[in-house]
Image (cartoon, rainbow, N blue to C red; front, side, top):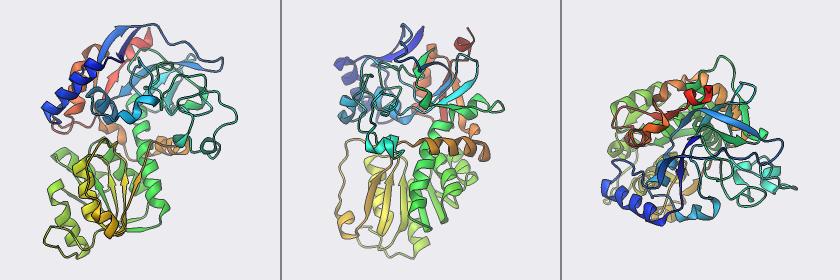
Length: 385
């Protein structure tokens, strides 16, 4: 079968990282990624199923991995060679469709008894992601044994499958996984109670979905958002943001909203209750700390990497920074309904066959500038064979 694979070849990763730096975020290098003829992955156990991807999204974490920008933190929890793709809707042996819940937890790894986090339903906090009868992998799409969505076939444990209603389009279904991330973030915000003000930094796929999820799951007085491009501003407003500004205008907007004073260095004396950073860059994190209120919280939803930050404001203003990784199954179940309620299938902007992977990666890396949101691989012809 055809699959896009990443091999563990240091020279290719180094070349991709250099290319990424030279391009300064203008696109993604594809050095370690190649289209190959490979065998279908074996079923790890008798209860596992084969899933034939129909659509598989390209995520920001995928781009960081391909571009050589992801942290070396991931090395012990990824196994090579692997086929990327964790935003997947596929077809099962009985012709039904399912969305993949990609986290590889104790249950999928055949570990008994399960760890405390898995026992409590917090599978995104599983402490066994490099153990059990599978090779290391925090999720399907980063594990050599499971395969990934950027292929004609992968395998999944029944606990990883969520049935897709017949009236769901494939485009709606492929948005469920990233929407589950947003639901998880919104529920984190909601758990702290009603908030007078919340700011969302970034209006790519994750930022837009988080805006929709916050409006559905949390009680927020005023919801601010930053967006670089016109179509992002339009979508952010349509999905529930009260005010959408360019990134450089966020501090001014927060000052106006909160009545804050400005110190000589540009630091605000007040700020918003919660900042949800859907980018995860050094600039976005610094901006989040700048506009968070004393005693406020920065929720990091976009995948960060190595960065340098001045944390004096965090200390002086008692600001909290909290990570927000992935989701639980209830987040997925809520995402399935939210995709319909908010019409999130409209965020699928373009699809490509695997053979045009270079174009697909380039489009996804430049989605904002090109007026797009979600870019995905279309494997429906392969699934019909």
